[in-house]
Image (cartoon, rainbow, N blue to C red; front, side, top):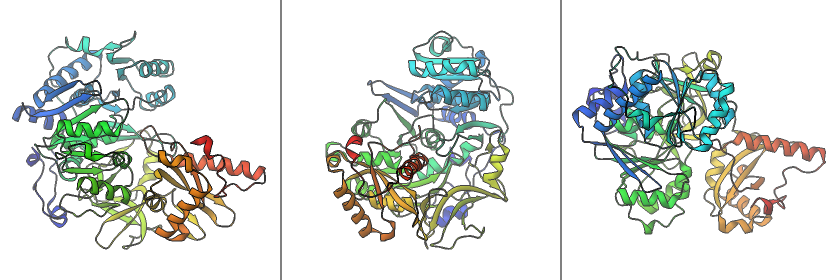
Length: 576
């Protein structure tokens, strides 16, 4: 399959990859027709999707199954009035109907807008009106459908509601009941141009209202590198990416790149993440490769790996947030597998990664994906030298690379702010070593300036994560009259450590940081909490921590009391 799109398919080194990697872009490329349907023709019995859930159900879909059922789904959607250019929001959790719907909408030239099932009425109204959403296809669960129904009075563009069950309330079409009687599918004459919008994501909103990231049909081609080279997949692979279908990580790891490679996508549809369940599934189904956010690996390594036969697992990747070296080391100790980190955004495919022919450096994001012209720039616009901190940018003066978004939909001003003068600004800060590996520092607005020093939150978090008491943490800066800002650590403790929360543990953690990194980086303030504030996609909301700290500082100033004494932790018991 991939031979159709690449001049050279196998690479032995990064130099070979940079020099010879090239994607051939067909006219009017459509992933559903040009990749998935071709697999159905050439290898109809090849397993494409292995879906199971926490109720013990298991359904296997060959490429022929996916082709035939996505054709029927496309015909069904068209019978409801969905056509080219229509905006369709999918709130399908990890149900297998997501893959059928994604392929069906692609075949119609409609725009898929994957969304998490955790959206509230307010969230749905915002998305409906910003994108003029015409149809919503959702899992038939009371809470989801209640939010959808309550959004309708303020969502004039929405005219079609579809439930995939089990519940189908009044006002919703019954997907499975009506789907079986859909007429035979006839492919439209001209489905799409390469630059037409294929899908759109609303960003997670870590700092403000979610943005609408529009991707053209060629975006899928950008994931050739993701699946074939970063995940290192082939036709023998059974791949599990842990991600809700409402977020970009799902198409990174559960769709485009994996089916380019001809691998089987494994889906575990579960309500609650339980580390032991994931390890059991790897053992039970002989999963060969895994990709998950660092948070998942942090919880997996707390389990007793000796209870599971994980011998089928041969390759593991991570993305979504920066990977702490301590997690890398522990996972390698337990499995012998070297975690390979990747970096990208909702606006891109994978831009940096650690590829199979490279030796990973724990904590490094890897090197540039050759389909992107990546640079680090200083505030004056010049390129950073090795060891210097700079913003990660994508140079686009020679054209938009495959995988980079088309625009922030209906927001040219915001698009221009992030993408101008031949540069797309990621807003992420990193440094590059002498070997060309990139090392994450943080978001532009996360870097802490204290007593003249610039401190990376991630650097401090990496040290904190090595302390046995720390399960999760977030480092932020808080105002200080003397130093400008001081470092604050918000920490989730392990269960056995929670009773020890207090001044002595604070001092122990501070001393630990001082002895494992430059002393000026140690957290002068430590807060122990039950859980960190996160977006509905699971990313830590440091902005929420900072906003809460501002309120505490204001209250303290009104009371003429010290706001951030490191030993002011008497309130900890109520939190833990």
